[in-house]
Length: 500
Image (cartoon, rainbow, N blue to C red):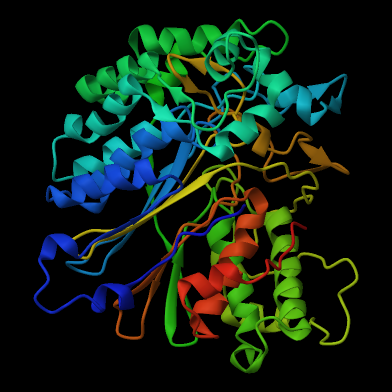
């Protein structure tokens, strides 16, 4: 089941006037044990960032198929003190030895299921480095304290959820190819672990102790880093090209959030290398030309407009969106209100567009070819508001379910490089999201924060779901902002969207 995690400040405002400040906080995440770890930090006076570190550490243990310290993350943070918005980029990066031919075989793109499993698809993990950097800026509790709940759960064990058990069973053959994964996710007689089985992970407990002591450096240098590289480079059928220097050089980036108006609100999303912030802004910018508040949320007209706005956004996304450190992405032109007016005029209220094409936004600098393949999957989302009113929206992933199916020291490695275009060019023109050394693959993750007309915090929104994330988030924002729905009502609506 796809889940959204949405926080509205009206819920906070509903607290009694005399409520203790320590109770004026919220955490939403994909597992109750992770939520409780985050709340524990907030009860101890920690910040939203402190809680996010604790939540991610526990998710690495209890939701290993979706995210973890072997993957990457985007963090949106709104500071309560001055209303400032920060975007922290912890996306995985391609190793220095990666070339545009990484996923080519005899000049043709590899089959996805062959590329995804093994070392070739593993990007340099970015989750711990970005959490550590953001914690230095905004943390209140000691770094080591944040890992105590996850370490305790890893040692004592946790009950396997029905969802995790179901996904182990569905992925049995790929997981069994990796000896460490096979030993961890299956019983001694080879059966997938059943729901309720108490699963311990002493290897992860030791890894997290090292992280608590040494920070992200524990995975960038030393014995854990050496084991990561060995697993990647020594894979028997699909080895990768990452080396220790790639891990050691990994650095998070701080980027400028994309904040655009919608009705009386301001919606802030994540910039490239995510396509999520731009695409959601485009969908909303197109829908603003229609009287969405008067439409039946479950009616055909609303569904048609949501789908068509999404198709137009995806046409632009597939041509223009990639890591802006490598490709000039015309973010300003793509989110310009005049440009979105021209895009909205393409929508026919009675019929679907025939093969919508990318537009011609201002500030476009290059001639590119569109990317056709799109394989994103998996992912988790975290939403937090702390006692001081700071808000955090963090989408975190190892890409596919169980990532590259490579377990090292108790955690799974990502297969994030398969988010690149396997083909580097088409008809002689480069594809923006082609593989390049040090480049971050394009993402659809769309952690978002909504401000009201006075600049106050209104909502914290995000979702898992691969390329469907964009449509999920846009639909939920329309439900909240146009249709006045509660979070529960918004997420209960049927999903309407597109992936191309």
